[in-house]
Image 1 (cartoon, helix red, strand yellow):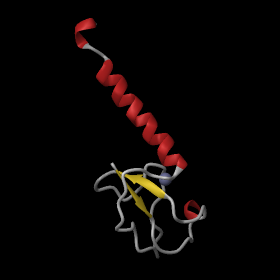
Image 2: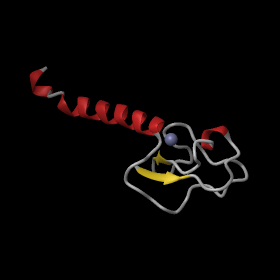
Image 3: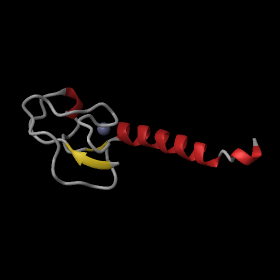
Image 4: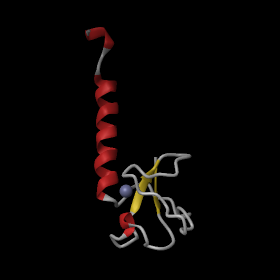
Length: 80
Ligand SMILES: [Zn+2]
């Protein structure tokens, strides 16, 4: 999971919040975890890749995904 920034116009509502948020993006995915995606006239996702996103919705969703993964990992089959 990497964090990237949408580039281009702030035409669509998802990017009205500063337009500089970093969203979590799964490899090969066009759409961010929160559902944000580049508009038709946008240049797409920026080339700058960060480890952590700044989009609150992406962070919340990312936390839930991690919690599910940890929950699964902590389920010890020998105890069942
Ligand atoms: Zn986001």
